[in-house]
Image (cartoon, rainbow, N blue to C red; front, top):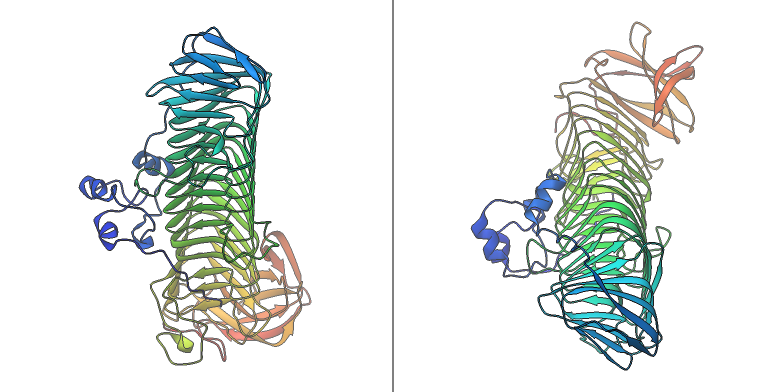
Length: 595
């Protein structure tokens, strides 16, 4: 097993004691109000309730603004190095167009080296881009320095482009090609291409809402950035960023700093994090595709975070189709991760999914196609749905900051000398298929299986095991098949309600071998086709009775559908007996029995 020390940034203990930040709890109004004045730089993962659904999380967060409707438009015509407009509230000074009054303005033409400035405090300003091409060599292409809400409406059928300066002064307030000091909305059926040469592409100091349109952003640093939130509610958005792709960075207000995707298509390629939410990340619909840090074939860097989807408190993936290919963790939360209906496919140069607290799967399809560790969290729960993992180290690892290092063979808290921490793996339903080179299903605490199907194609080398549980390992329902090397073989406890068997074969069998588990009457109770070479197999189902003898045969046929190698049925045929075991007895040289 590979255990890593994870350091969390220091934060006032009074803040953590006073309130559960956004996504942790929607109760305790007094404590939440007290915490809103303090920086939310980290979270006590044990306080984050990972069972929450998207509606609960978003209800505790600041409400996103609604897009203001356009009114009768006044025209602003751009013409190279100048512009013309007869509208009140519009002044033109050389190549700078300044809007000082609320209203709707239609902008068309080309500004080769100029800027649209909105200076209308507490006002709502709608800019209809109707074939507008704006380039600035000194600042942002569009800068709303004083505004309540800026709406950028893309006229149907038009193509619009914005490009800014190559650099900004350190600490500059305006620092994006499209910038708003107030809420910013992007809507309409047209196309917008934004190039952030000097820093960010599109940025709001309040909330950023993309409702529709085809938006392409290329940025030196962050692609889309909203301080309080970023909401994607439609459109087709493509982001290429030298920093983070999509970012909400308010780490001071407990109800802000979130990212929500409800519809549309969001495609991100980033050197930093693909999506980075200071608090909550919620996806309920649409299509999200992220490549961060060069993808899973690139080793994660020491100084740059290049995670796929990252949240500071809680990630809820409740709908839509999500793919992430990242050099660092593909899905990461400093608090909890809840898969609650989404279809998620990830690959990572580190963890496929990592949660400092709870990692819960409900009614989702989660596929980790490549990772060092597949699913890692303090408390991992599969209630329903389907999860599959391919990993070069542990497949499923319940661990955390206070986990001990690799087994030393000492006589610590659990069997084999490992300490037993406050960690758990719980399977109550659904399907979990693991293909690991390290430990398959690994808990530095306890493990419980009450239902569902768990299939582990574990390690071929003896330094790891298909199962590795430091504390109590109980099974009372469902089906378990775990095949791997025999040197570290682990089985459920003898006091488990459901029977199980562990068979260590005399010789290693090759990948693709059909194994049949047969009861005393000659009935095949399980058929398993090995995914790799193995010498030990653990099997449990309602068909196994403790204290009863069973035989393992090699050969015969596997019939019907297969789940990770576990076939629906099998035929013994001319198979050869390779082992005889008594259900409920620990593997020779391995670990089993009471925990």
